[in-house]
Image (cartoon, rainbow, N blue to C red; front, side, top):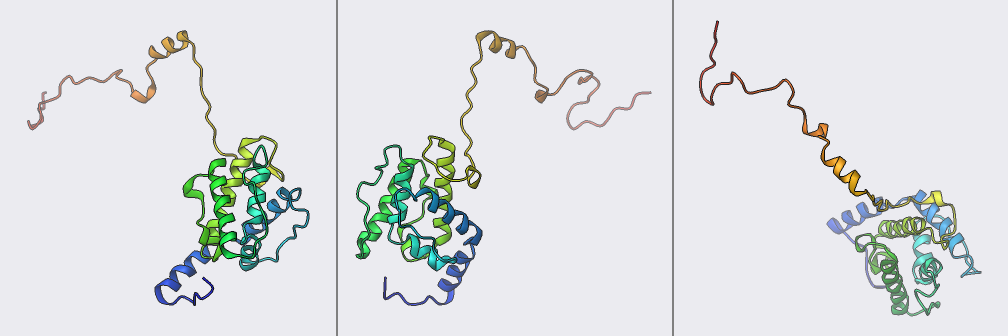
Length: 202
């Protein structure tokens, strides 16, 4: 990973398109949320400099992400061991633990980034989308673990079951919906068979 050189040609073009999806305003929102959400778990947390490289470096070891998911879980123990590590595989392992815990929390697989997207900075826009999805679910759950402005995220649509009585169900069967149209004033009287000439009668 450390020996990976710059990309050229088509690979470079693809990477440039991925980089263009990165949202600077969303970075600011996510930074503010993580600062508020993790303040209790991480007393020494400091706000990173603005920009994608600083945001990636801030999250890269997985410690902040693990504290984030722990602060949202009901028992605070979604990930039991969280520590700063210098070893690359330990840092990547913590990112993977966060991804598994986020999926268990309710984030869909399609909304989750890959470990290399964050660790190597390949797709930080995907990291942003995953954190947004996590925030949306946290606000929707409304279990008291979310901290910050609820307006930062959107509540996901929830099931709204209806409970109709037997009488209401029977009444509904007798109503003809206007979606079916109306047959009043229309008939097939005077129509000719298919393929025949139109008959004009004086």
